[in-house]
Length: 160
Image 1 (cartoon, rainbow, N blue to C red):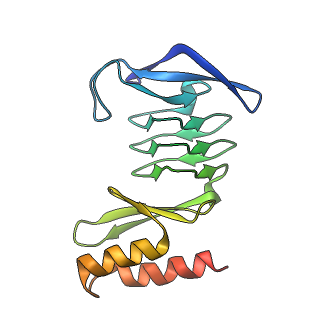
Image 2 (image 1 turned 30 degrees about the vertical axis):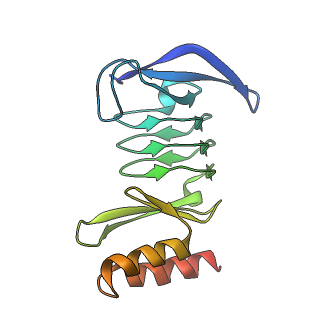
């Protein structure tokens, strides 16, 4: 059973009718009554996943696990977004190749999410460009840790 419901508030977007969601019980995303983003149908949002802000999830896409879609992000098409993934900002995810997650980084085994449409990186409360990510890692880890090979890998991906 999902902890949210579709409200009567709806919008037309890309020839689809999307409904704002609202929490029906207290959970990690907020208190009962908290409004979320917009989805086309209940099957777009599964498990403990959440859509907030002005984010849109529609089509055959599924957001599940503990994944979050925030801000003005869009998930559509046949995209499956699952696990500890955060899609936010102006990112657009139509298929699974539009984003990537890398796990077990740093002292806390952090998972980072890379969105290719806007070349942004999300890690915990951090969201920014690759350069901003490098700066934050340098400040925190001082050249040590397993973030550095990951940064080189992301640079290669962004330059392809």
